Length: 318
Image 1 (tube, rainbow, N blue to C red):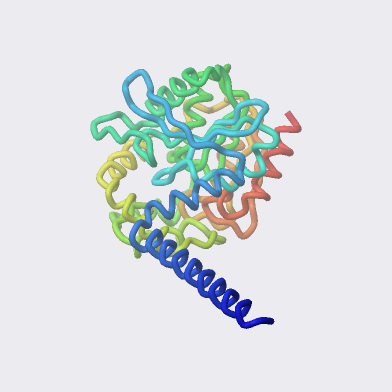
Image 2 (image 1 turned 120 degrees about the vertical axis):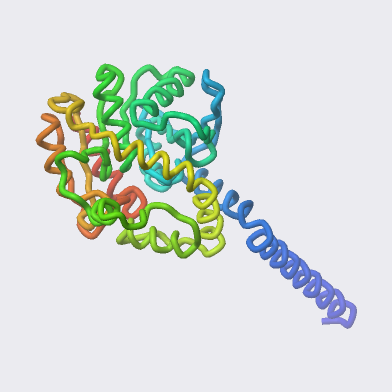
């Protein structure tokens, strides 16, 4: 190699190293100076891999609902649990969008949707908001999936408007307060202890992940900090919402409900006792129960492919 060629090679190597260093500095700035932006970028990548697009619309009452949407087929509306948001369904949606038109909103009071301080957050009030949301999307009937509090809302929807709900996917559903066995969380709260579902710090968030999931996905520290801050800022409202959903037992409304339902519980759920599945089976004449071994309160996050395959088999059987 000639001397001039060596000089040009060294120059290219230095330029390449400079670009790599600059890229590293930019990445560090994004993660450590703008962690919220970094979380947004990561979520956008997850949405794209799952065939989802983030959208928003305004309801008639002026509140804003942000939601994920993707896929083709019959509409499947997925309702998240207490303290959660639409992204609890992002990974499971990867296996669902090839089969269904998936719609996962942030319920009012959570995520990127409106958080009116003086609103009614009872399950029946949330049903009316989700119905208004679906009408705005020109979706007159749906299959509904709900996780924890979302399942309580889904059951309330099917009980009040059975012709609108074609089937139910109930993931560790809440709302069976009168007749189900008490969980670890229920015993703590009823005894006057601190509610472990509320978050004020990263330590609280870590404890919540350990409580709710036996098989949690990896969560980067910067993402934990962002999510913990969001929960801390929403804590006062969440206390109000928790009181309202805890006061509403749905058993009387759903007894004998003929809607086909897939009832799923994690074997190691510490938030809602898995024995609730048998109570639901007795209340719902067309319920099929699946207990997922080694799983906690959030099957769609802990084992998304397994949860989706069970659901697809259920839908194919209808």
